[in-house]
Image (cartoon, rainbow, N blue to C red; front, side, top):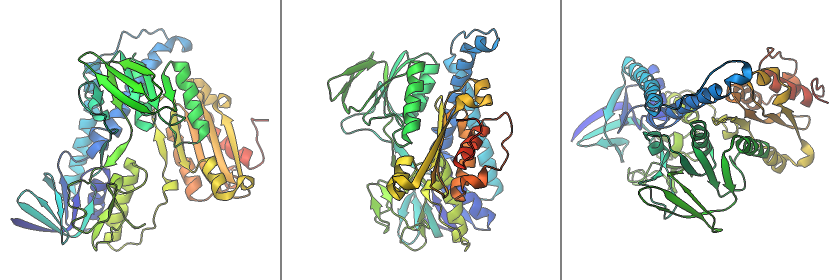
Length: 457
């Protein structure tokens, strides 16, 4: 067995892994990056980027349908599935080429193959062993299913849904979280009949209730059906269709069933526990600095308990590389990580919900304000409804910012700054928001919480 020595060995080339590799190389480290598929991971090849390309194509289709409302004569001739695929794959290929160029320019050694963690800070790939002064685990996640629900045929994961070469006429989406509502939005815009099945009482159940209810109203107006509060029981399929039965006996039939019940950590069989790392239900347990407890062994991204978001893993990768280089990097609380669901309308949030704020501080110590996007000029121009909700501690800082509406994902960074800097609405209210922009809606909410609402009674 050949042994290769590096300053840093990274197992997994997704967002967290390649960010750690780029930053460590920038800091003068000799880096090996081990990836069994393609550098960029799920986000670039099977997740964030391709799904958002689909969502943009869906947005264009909706714009054509509604063009007459703004005086533009246009007709939607249909959806060219092959053309959409070519557009999506072109975006991914361009981003992949750019990432490969960055990695090569930084002198990072990329090892193609399936790695397994061994003892003494080494990773084996086939007959080779890569030894690092430090090792970062960044193996990402996989699409989960439910007990007894076998993937295959007309029962799809999100990765398989992306690879479909047709626009289905009728689809059932099992799961009303981020992945489920994004695919529901795409397929509806492409002309499919969509039904979401969610066992919890609301869509996007981890969001503030105002956003959940607002999204439900928006989907209902669009014609996207959903069944809430009843658990899945079973699915049966033949060569033409799939039938889903719920625990209350209700049934739904469609061309395909998308299983969107979350993602699990990809850690099984990779030697993590044997090497001394603590693993709980597949997740690698780390301290706030992302250390596993084994000297020189770190973990980042979806395998670490918490939000499974590409930008979280990316930031964690950078932080670990800097800590390895001897820099002091403060831990980032999960509450300061922005979250965006790119359905139509979009859902974006950062910080804690009003319910969580009340649980933490008491009902008398929490104040919130909701601003309807109907009062925002730019939102009226682009034709979106929605809500801005800001939660603050009474006479204290902003605790949460929650947005619903087209394009509001572009606004959440201001909310993140407010939450991370523990800003009071009075600190932000004097700042200027350009007119006419959707950011003025946030400005109105901060003004109202500062005691001087202008466009609301």
